[in-house]
Amino acid sequence: MLSAWLLGVFVFAMVIGQIRDIVAHATRDQNYYIDALNKIASHMARLSVPAKLQKRVRFWYKFTWDLQKTLNETEIIRVLPLKMRTDLMLCIHSHTLSRVDLFKNINRSVLRDLVLKFQPILFLPGEYICRKGDVGHEMYIVNKGTIQVLDPETRRLLVTLGEGSVFGEIAILNLHGHTKRTADVRSCGYSQLFALKKQDLWETLRNYPEYEKVLKRKVGRILRQKQQQSTAKTLNIDNQPEQTIIPEMADIQIVEQIPIEPIVKERPKTPKLFQTVLEAIKPESTLNQYFIGHHRNKFRSYSLQAPSPEPGWNENDISRQKSLDL
Image 1 (tube, rainbow, N blue to C red):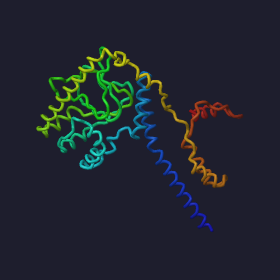
Image 2: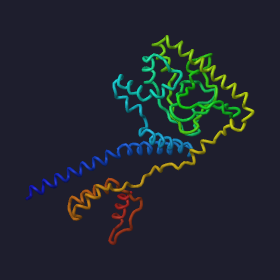
Image 3: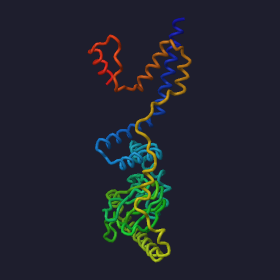
Image 4: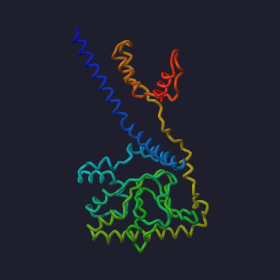
């Protein structure tokens, strides 16, 4: 009889342990996100970062997590072998690269080298990607979203870039002596871009010198097309003057109006399956008291206010209780 009872307790404890592991595994990623958000929030508060900038940083964390469920997708695939990582990146980015005129009909070996160097970047509404006069260190490929190219002096919209568009390639290729940005570029809404650094591009081109000439010819042709489109829009700009002027802070105000998820979370509720198991156990049983005590200790709250002294307490008892509460 005793052995059967012990066997039942052992099996039951094993089942409870498995349930606990399942619940912990299900909330592990969410706990990682909350921990990262708390760390950056504490760091910004310690450095007295302005409230508006703190909101933008926190919202970037939330938007990035909601979109891809990770804060750094590059780290996830870095452990893979080089060839497998290359094949995976080509599979992920093949749809985007097929829409980029700059990379159409190029050697597949070149593309395999370049795709490993793409860095995904997320931008919020109204966030500037680059400003006129900035030194160009990278080019960008629009994967998702809409990008506005603006004249910084007149605030006129020069061109709108959609998915598959490329900008910044003139600066990193030093085409016609251009190494600085020629306009302001900002995200119209939520945008995901791929950045290719100048150093990474030239490192690849050194291995494929024949493609360097092809790439520069393509960029030159694209540049001429852009200049023709810009000239055509300038000739027609008097017909629609109001539609081409973009306010400076229009989209940034949208971000500030979005409520930010609070840093301090409410105490999580007891999982329903765990609660059902507790209800099935007798309240006076030792096993029930153990699980209830373990659950409470995991989410213990500490009071900063000492309780009223009990009758018969002396000064030493009161001081000892205050130190325990704090």
